[in-house]
Image (tube, rainbow, N blue to C red; front, side):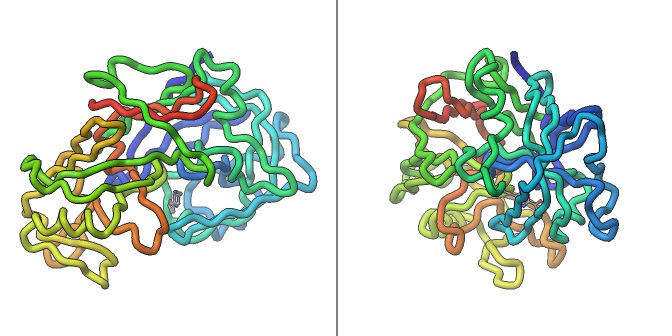
Length: 328
Ligand SMILES: NCc1ccc(-c2ccco2)nc1
């Protein structure tokens, strides 16, 4: 089987939300290659924590409770959720898992309550970091992958308009040139890979140092790189500065933003400057940068700001996982 589903950006491309059918309900979930739990708002939650989101009905005929199973998850941005576990049919654009662990929230943090566009998350990292106890559950991809035409999924994220995820096949209309594959280190449960040198702007002269180990994370809005690369980038943005009150680099919204070229698997991938204007700060006609330092996170994250510039293939067809990137 295969699946094809639209990936709809929230405001400022903050996250990408996809329709998922669970039993007879359709919920809109944030597909996240940086985590491994499929969790949903549910009828078990206090109404004070729900602000218009669709709730998974745990009383529906097709939902089977997994007695004694619970989950609790916290994310790098300080948000989190917890609850209990059901099994139900999950259909993503035609790719169907007949018995998928659906983690029904009994409580979510305020960040999720106020994220009115999302009814939950669908994790696409490795099942080794699933947070269900006493027994970790498989991700949707792991549940269905043996039934897919090919054991892979792809991400085509767009700015301010629908992109798509596919399961089981590569859509050759989504990219130009060839796909460059590189090995994945999933020892931390993520789609980890090694990135090489970078160049700020088209100059080609600013390539200084290498980026090193990184993860591909559709559930993170921005791109977080080592300090040296980030300082090198903003040294080319007139009027930019680090704002402790905003918590990152900002610049005049009128600033001209250079591109950033990153070498992966020996191929240079160009992130256009426009990708690095994330959102207005709300004060002084300054804008918040889509590139920020990885200090305090512990690893380098190639989030949506990078992924919008490429077609990404998350591939387990070779036995060992690999990740592919192509220009789009
Ligand atoms: N990378 C995991 C993740 C995804 C979404 C969110 C989130 C918080 C509020 C709205 O969305 N946090 C973390």
